[in-house]
Length: 310
Length: 310
Ligand SMILES: [Zn+2]
Image (cartoon, rainbow over all chains, first blue to last red):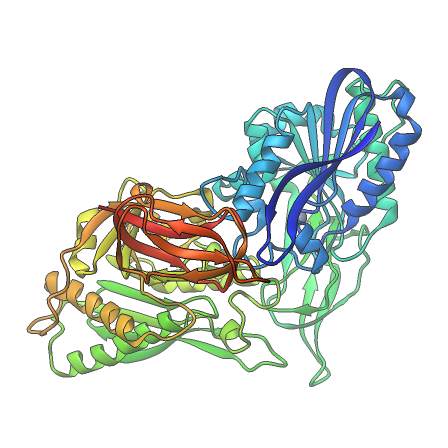
């Protein structure tokens, strides 16, 4: 069975309702529950493809399905519909207002309703797609505080890289942190680039989701073969930021391996025809993040290199 | 007065370098620093700081700053956004005031936060003229983050009507106020009535309150100032939040600072098509309007007022 259900809603000022919806796909007993969540940031669209395609793939496998899969394609429908990353008309990023509240603003009320609906699931996968500036390889990001619980399952997600990052207080207001602290294991996926869909990454993740479902005994079929990810902590990730403003001209490709000292790209000055800065790799390794949007300010992130023990 | 360029925002080739100035008064001591506008719509905050610069130039010339007192005022660090009518960093919509303590090798707004913080660190007292994430009118007040090592009583020395103490939330931990305190500056956020428009009376009130603070602490001598008010200390958790259920046009009935009786209508939410009243927002108890949402139309389930009970 396949049903569209309302998660939480609120009236907008003029004749419209903000409604968060999910696609509930139900299989046989026992009732384990998997939540697939995306669209927190309105400029991240890879999750749109995954939500659509996963629903189709699961429909075909309905007889093999044990338990419930809830697909939440748009936690921030107003952002998606207006090509806006944040919450339209609101200062705070949506991923900084969880677990929400019924004592504050509308968006915090909505966030509270979302948490209430997802809480208790056996697993939640929160799909992000970088932003318009950076292209990312498919990866899982895990807060070191919940690494022990999440690492075993994350390895089945069929993604290239598993980044165990340090904890910062400000991250305590993310969806993933809030759910993990409520005892609902939540994995954060990052992949692709904002405002675009990278279909191959989406398909790769869907294979991973099916494999995790097999692991959770939610799908009565053998686990599809998945490639294990590279697992790394912050220590093996090197950052390259621009020190000058201008136009970034890359000299390498995303997902390429580079040597320490290799030229990654230039900050060009179209006014003078000059070069304001040459950017070199601080380490040998894999370019897992690469600047996509050409206009840069001093400080703009250009690349992240996964190096160290590789 | 000595004006120094604290740092320069570089956005070449299409925008010219933007200097961020610090105005220094008195000795080399780091007695008190005032931060004006950080966001691009904090016109009132910039103007208040500018008026303070004007006053301090006069007081310094008259010999009224005591010998071992050193003051710094930064009227504005938000020029890059202000000049293009944006509240946040125009490229990625990030908020410099959610990037503290900053990072000198990080993203653009992290670097700017770091440079601002370098200039402001080490002062005994710090005052940030700031704005809330919700647009609205306030009773002028001092706000102190309740981190456990703050000195609440000093907040009374401004002679503003209220002193509010707030328990920090995760999203507060990256603000200037919070980090300034962590770095052992006694920090106050000063909220005036307005943000994105100039309110002369409340700007003057705020300027006077800072001079009053300096006078009461013996840093200024023989400065005649209006008496100020007997400050009432209120914990934010004791404020009464008044929320709406319906969306529509918001028509306020009572201005900020006014006394309301239990049951009195404070605002109406009217139907945007027929002007019929959808909801009467009534005072749940007797009190003073501390915060009134500034909005022409309003969504459901959000904050309309905050009331100081009594
Ligand atoms: Zn995201």
